[in-house]
Image 1: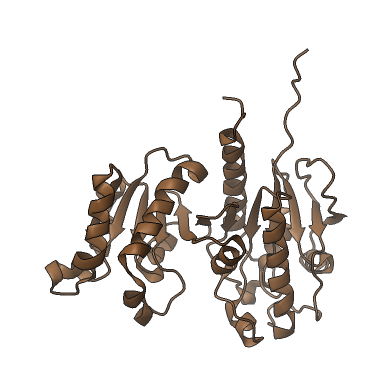
Image 2: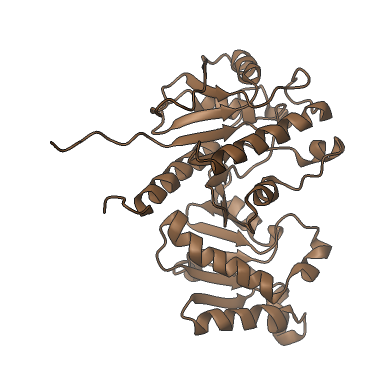
Amino acid sequence: MTDIRQPPPPRIALTPGEPAGIGPDLCVALAQRPHAAELVAVCDPTLLQERAGLLGLPLEILPHDPDRIPAPQRAGTLQVHAAARLREPVRPGRLDPRNAGYVIETLNATCRDCLAGQFEAVVTAPVHKGVINDAGLAFTGHTELFAEHCHAKPVMLLAAPGLRVALATTHLALKDVPAALNRQLIAEVLTTLLADLPRRLGIAAPRIVVCGLNPHAGEGGHLGGEEIEIIAPVIADFRARGADVRGPVPADTAFLPPRLADTDVVLAMYHDQGLPVLKHLGFGHAVNVTLGLPIIRTSVDHGTALDLAGTGQADVGSLAAALDMAIGMAELERNQAPGAPR
């Protein structure tokens, strides 16, 4: 007799991030609706219980049992893996460096559990880099922390309806960007995009537009030589191997609708070259995806919004979109696994 039972849904880790920010609010709001995955918040359970009470939202905290078969998320409930405990009570909107170590512990534990196969993906709410550094902890961002755990060279990609932007460099001061760019870096980023866009997002033959660094893509060398010396040779090499990689193009025309009509990803050279355009187009509904990792990680497109924490005014849209994308990516990975039904 044929076994017609459906496989269990994906088990997705959820990190609330900075406890004084809107991350806990968003996790509580997300738990108000059912989901086609099992969500497990990795945090101190008192944080979510207190924030739910402050917001006036019902929330039943359930202890996470990793040995139980995953089940779809029921509205009004949220499993919690208490991998770390807060050092001090949390006041929404008030940063406390004494809780910075707790934030890092939740991220470290989540990444270890993802690598161990306990979660099929992780969705992260925003952290506050400043307060973590104020606490004396070296921290550049989620992307870099996960890269260290995974011994990988990740690529940050943000996706909004109608546009995807990848970054050659991430959290660098603008004055440090030119020195960071070299042929090896550009080649590694393009290699990751060409490998992970099919694997993670189902884009079979990626079409990539590469921005120049300088105005007018260097104006033939008159406004800078990075395009001629670094970017163009790498693009030529990938094109010679059959990849659909174009550029370098001026950033001020890279995002025009006719160009985007046949483009899957725009590769920007630095953070604020590409992300302002994407956030103008889809802020609050865009998703931050980390490519190049052995695990699936998605995140929101915004910060901690301390002024909104505990007020009930935080928009859950980006976290919900990040969760939906993580679920889709986990299902795609299952379908691509050896032995998966075709």
